Image 1 (cartoon, rainbow, N blue to C red):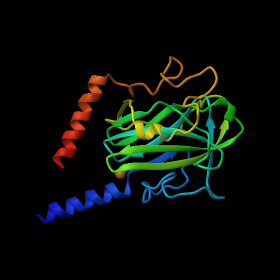
Image 2: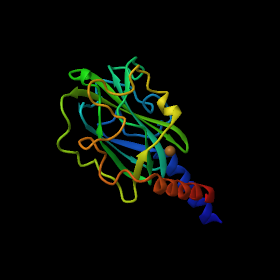
Image 3: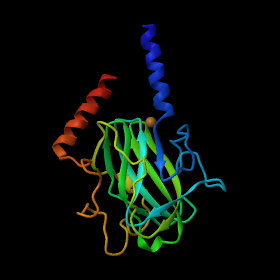
Image 4: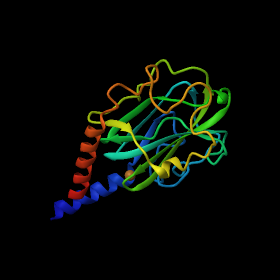
Amino acid sequence: MLAKSILLSILTVSVANAHFTLRHPAPFGKSAANQDQGPCGGYTLSDSTPVTEFHVDGEAVAYSSSHPEVKVLFRIIEGNSPDGPNSFKGYPIVEQFGAGDFCEPRVTAPKSLVGKQGIVQVVQNAVDGMLYACAYVRFVNGALSDLPDTCKNGTGVDAGFGEDAALEALVSGSSDAPTGSQTTSAPTGTNTPSSGSLKSISLVAGVVGMAVAVFGGL
Ligand SMILES: [Cu+2]
């Protein structure tokens, strides 16, 4: 009984302290303590906020997640304010399964942002609510050629496209896809997610069922 309650406390603490950790681009801050606070998990821009280059034709966004099932929005914001008027969906909503490292290597931004500063906001709709992390970026031309070491998918981590009205509502710009000739509505031969990251709906449904069963058991 005692052992069980200790185990439960440990589980509770770990869930509270580790929702997800943004690894690339470099986040405003690394603590997840206030990650339920929008727009940037309790952090604001400061003189010491790191700035990462963001390639508008394809940039890696990598994080480590403690939750076995989340929906994720990769939101691209023009300018220095997370509440700025122009924001874009950098990728379709992703539904990620399995806790651990996850990377989407081809998040995009409108070409019109090249040369400007902006914010990449990662928002997860998780079992414990909406979770936020931000990174300060400078938009540059082209696509990232060498993926950072942090861009990897953990064992058992999988993902597919998802739908989430609450996440979609956060994209304020009139255009929810990058402008120009490219779109993010579906991956193409030259703009695919990491191999193996997309599975058939039936497999995804099975994983959801397992996740629900696990949570039901807890
Ligand atoms: Cu959490």
